[in-house]
Length: 208
Image (tube, rainbow, N blue to C red; front, side):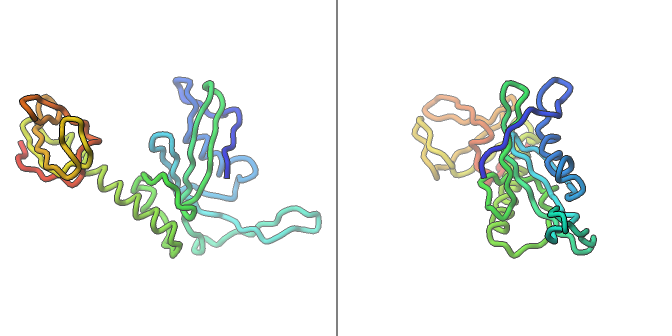
């Protein structure tokens, strides 16, 4: 599916378009009102993730050609993941591309609070997507721990990137936290490394 755009309806106090509210409204307002329930939704950057359950199911047309829906008993409802790519333009136009987990989205940073609400599935694309999301969550949690380590802490890991100073993928790097930055020395020059460049599978040598 392609992108859909329209003049935004929901805005934050600072005037920015409220992307999460716009995506929530896709399920809760308009023609979809009463058809879905959002158990949990979250924005990760510009990507919207939500645990959604269907409240009704389509059963055909009535004598007037209108769509007919029957309620789904609560114990038969399944919870699935929605993934929306979002964009804005000129501060007043909202763009979105909606997908669900069975489409195997490339975006795989769904938070665990959403993943934990999903029903069991045997869909291979959805299972693969959930696995990738969980792996990324674990990596993110491991990297977040770096912020809690104090100055003087030392970590070691095999590099996941090539650097222009001669370090290649797989080379061992030892970093020391100094003034809240992770630094190392090579050729008598001190370098600082962004957290996103650190291998999540690091080993703590010294925890200050």
